[in-house]
Amino acid sequence: YFGDFVRWNYVKRYLPDTKNQLVLMDVGCGQGEYKDLIESKGYFWVGYDMHINPLNAEIKFADLTDLNNIKNEYFDAIICIDVIEHIKDDNKAMSELNRVLKSNGLVILHTPNNEQKHIVINPEEQKDHVRKGYNKSELYELFVKNNFIIKEIVPTFNQVEASLWDLNYCFSKKIPIDLKDIVKNMRNHLHYGWLIMGRKK
Image 1 (tube, rainbow, N blue to C red):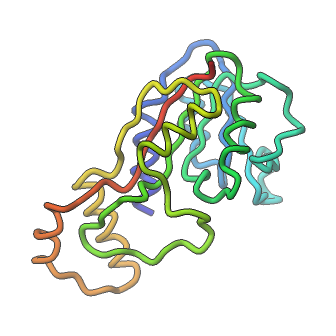
Image 2 (image 1 turned 180 degrees about the vertical axis):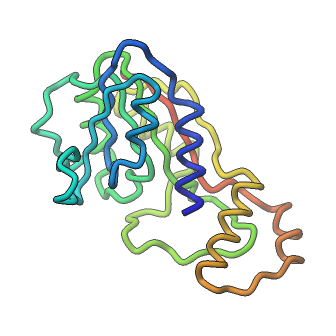
């Protein structure tokens, strides 16, 4: 899936390397797609998800709004990739991430841009999303309200990445492609996601 590849590369680019075997929480980790990348950067990877595959004992169960089985200030870093848009009480989720993160710990979060404009086609809305995504000011508010200092917000899915994502989607759904529309819509493209990096106060 091309979107996964794009997000993976943004995490690779912005998650700093470490030599200290810092403990990183990958929340909403799916089947652990980021595990090898995280470990290659020097972290000890711990994966959590609400949907557990019984064949993968490494992944622990977690409800992001209630991490009561995790001690305060346990993790050195957290990644949360395309998860927060699935959670109704996003403030509670961010508050819990802050609680389990060490002081000055790093959090990297990726989520869709709710103002995105697609180049090829507008794909169908995902039924498991409780919101389309966030704009930049909403992300600032979500982080600041929950005691994070924002270091950087990076728009993701530039014109090339977005075009390839859309084409991949069209091919998978067998949707006809009009090259004239692609050229016209390139001018109006608005990136599809945000990567936001913050530190706990």
